[in-house]
Amino acid sequence: MQVQSPDPLSGLRIWCCHELCCRFKMWLGSCVAMVVFLYSGSEVLVTDYHFLDTLFILMLFGWSVIPFMYLISFLFSSHTSAYIKLLLFSWGSSFHIKHANVIVFLIIDKESASKSHMLNSMMLLPIHNLGMSISRYYDFQQTKATCASKKNVPIFMNCSEEGNVYGLEADAIGRFLIAMAVTGLIFFLLIFLLETTSWTMRTFVFRSIFFGIYKKFNKERVSMELSVESEDEDVQNERNRILEYPQESLNSTVLIKELAKIYFAMPAVFAVRNISVAIKKEECFGLLGLNGAGKTTSFQILTGEEVATSGDVFIEHLSITKNVLKVRSKIGYCPQFDALLDYMTAREIMTMYARLWGIPEKQINHYVNKSIQSLNLEPYADKFIYTYSGGNKRRLSTAIALMGKPSVIFLDEPSTGMDPVARRLLWNTVTQTRESGKVIIITSHSMEECDALCTRLAIMVKGKFVCLGSPQHLKNKFGNVYILKAKIKIDKDENKLKDFKDFMATTFPGSELKHENQGILDYYVPSKDNSWGKMFGILEEAKEEFHLEDYSISQITLEQVFLTFANPENTEAHG
Image (tube, rainbow, N blue to C red; front, side, top):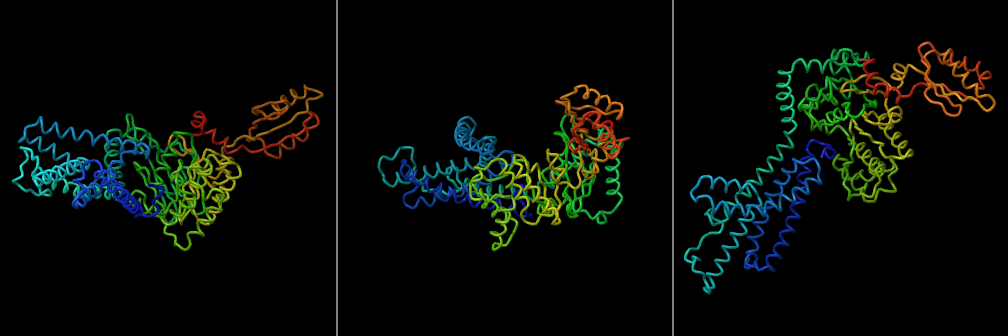
């Protein structure tokens, strides 16, 4: 639903489309039921225009049961699990409610108040109302037909009274029909409330109630966990800039302000701890961290999936806490796990999203074809999505995220499973999108990808930013070593290898041999007292003496900077 919500009303539109589709299926099912009744000895339900009454009962059941199932579906996070469990629930409830009715009638006294309450509570279940309506309508018409024939009339059958099957008497069906009509309306209203106010309710519960109570009784721990002392200088400067200046003067498309998330378990888990950053147009911001660092939770808050415990996120000056539906209309989202419909083609699903975004009908074909070409999806555009490889599904999810005119695009590990050619094509597309004035926020486990795409990035450890800046800035600041790769010719004199190692130890104190293989040596050389020019000069003079065939000096990579922070000991040292 999150991916299919490009505008504030699309949630309700999607529910209405589902409702119309289910209504049509319900009508087909009712027609099949008519045929079953006709040929199963229950022809009294379909003859003499009784099929109109039976059809009316089935339609009322559909009106009630469809929103009822929608409501229950909110309890599940997996559509597969929901489908199986709801199917079992429908089958099981239809079987057990009949027996529950018999037990209530036989065991509980007729005038008992508890009996009345139990029977009335059962009327909240659509399957109960259907069963009672069909069975009592059948009994009524069967009695009427038997009395009319005046043949073999049982002694217990009362033919002197002619009742109304739609009445409110105990043996009539009126109250069950009213129950289905009323509960159907109530269930639809509840869905509407969930769609329009669930975010507000969740925000109030988590921020005002849970956090308020927890903070009152755990003030010291909250203060310690959300402390911003001893943080990196760049992170502190960004925080101060955001807190000191008005939002309008920051000129940012995305503003994250003192964002925190606490999961109120036993004990409480501080997943995100007061992070702040302002992201401008034409920026690609990377969010990096090990599993459990807080980047996934941060991403979920930014996309409106999770409620922040404190702090706020502003997208084009709109608070996600107060205006989540409007904010969702301004973002494109490629989730970590592909939210695709298996039995649609890429062309069909992109056309659907183009319509959801409100792209004019005349422009849709051109727009979809352009999107397909940009990520080289032409060979698969008209094939069912379930036939796609993981990489092709990621490409399609990214193409969907880039559709429409979102101001901010969130990409959660977009290149997972892609081959190098497809990955490079994706990078080019993302770069072009960023240069068109969009903001890209990306999470990835590929440091090469972040180095290629990100104009700025932050590394998270234990819910906090431990560094912030451009990839080059971070490599300059935290990459306190050069990487020397040297190849020694050892065919004639293997002692030269040992001599070169001694030379490195004395000439570059603190240098560390990381890897050695058949005369090829990898060294980490401290950059503190050594410049590029100095190292090149020394090694050029030593080439002949140590039979140095080839060598290269390079800066530390972004991945090595990341691994520095990933090591807890190094993290403490930087802190």
